[in-house]
Structures are given as C-alpha cells and as structure tokens.
View 1 (cartoon, helix red, strand yellow):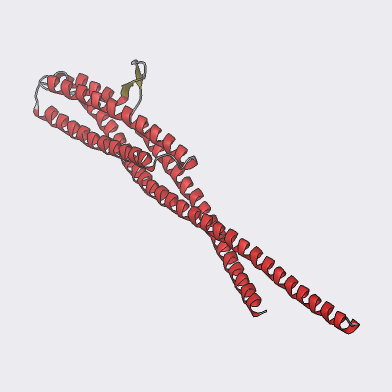
View 2 (cartoon, rainbow, N blue to C red):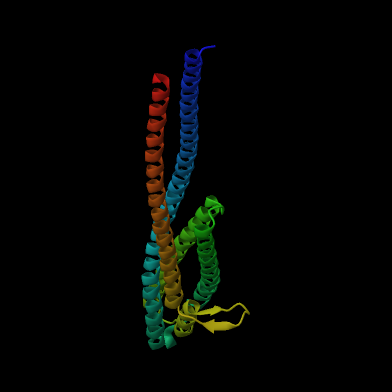
Length: 280
C-alpha cells in the first residue's frame, strides 16, 4: 500500500471521527435541554397547583372575613341595645321606687317574666361566649393548619352569628317587656310590689352565676362589650389571615410566572438545538 493511499485512509477516518464526535455532542446537548425542559414543566405544574390551592384558601378566608364583619356589626348593635336596656331597667327601678306603695297586681306576672328572662339570658350569654371562644380558637388553628375542615369553621361562624341574632331578638323582647311594665304601672292603681319587681328585673340583667354556681355581679353592657371585643378580635384574626394568604398567593403567582418564562425559554432552546441537529 502506498504512502498516498495510507494518508487518504487516515484523513477519511479522522473526518468520520470528527463528524461522530459532533453528533454525540449535539445529542448530549439535546438530552440535557430535554431534561431541563421536563424539570421546568414539573416546576410550572407545582407552582400552578400551589396557586390554585392558595386561591381557594384566599376565597375561603375572604368569605369568613365577610361573616366576621357581619358578626362584628351585629355584636356592636347588641352592645348599644344592651346599654339602652340596662339604662331602661335602671330607670324603671327608680320610677318604681316612687310608686312602691301602689304596686300590687303585676307581681305574679312580673315574677314569671323575670324568672323566664333570667334563665333564657343566662343560657344565651353562656352559649354565645362558648361559641365565640371556640370559633376564635378554630379560626386561629385554621390559619396555621389548612387541613382543618372549612365546613367546621363555617358552621362555627354561622352558629356564632345565629346566636347573636337570637340575643338581639331576646333583647328586643326585653325592651317590649319594659314597655309593658311601664303601661302596667300607669294603668294599675295599686301595684305594691313594683319596686321589688323592677329591682329583680334589673338584677336579671346585672347578675349571672359563675361556673361554680355562685352569683357574681356583671352588667349586661359589660358582657356585650366583651362579646363585641371578641368579635373585633375575630375580625382582626381573619383580616390578618386574608392578608397573609394574599401575600402568599401573590408570591406564588410571581414564582409561577418566572417558571413559565423559564419553561418557554428552555423549550425555544430545545427547538433550536433540534433544528440545528437536523440541519447538520
């Protein structure tokens, strides 16, 4: 074999090796880009799931915030109405003392009303305090643990709202009772026990038993003040939860946008690499 022929074979093999090396290099580049695209797609799907989850969470908290706002408004109205009722009861007691010797006929009816109202108010006030504290605790836990049932939070919020509405209706009934007592005092000529009954009714609004069953003095206004303060705290908790979730959602959307941009860039690079490989 001549030297010239040997040189030709060497050059041809070198050319084939170079071509093969280029092909392998391009294939490795395409494989790497393909893997990056797959990873980017997974990131986009992950961020999309996070955005959807946070959107649902935000909407739920927004609904709870609206409910908390309604409850807060109702509690504020109850607070004002309670103050008016306590003052009305106090005025009635003072007016009754003037006509103490004239009070006679309304004793049995007023006793029945006072006892029934006292029992009802004790139960309603205790129930509202328990419901509000439980709802506040669950909402705090819900803000930290999304696994807590939304239905449970919603049911507690609704129960608190319903209980406040019942108190409002009961307070209106009490106001009507005061009006009736005023009419009785004006129409009856000899209600000897008016002062005693008015004082008992006033105590119905200002004395409730504590957990041990012993009597402890509270004003209805102070109890409703506490209920309003609890409603304000509950609203503040929900407002904070909405703000936190809104920030989380905004950040997640930003991450999703970045991931989508990166995916498009990698897809474009992969398409260009494939085109270059086919053209070579």
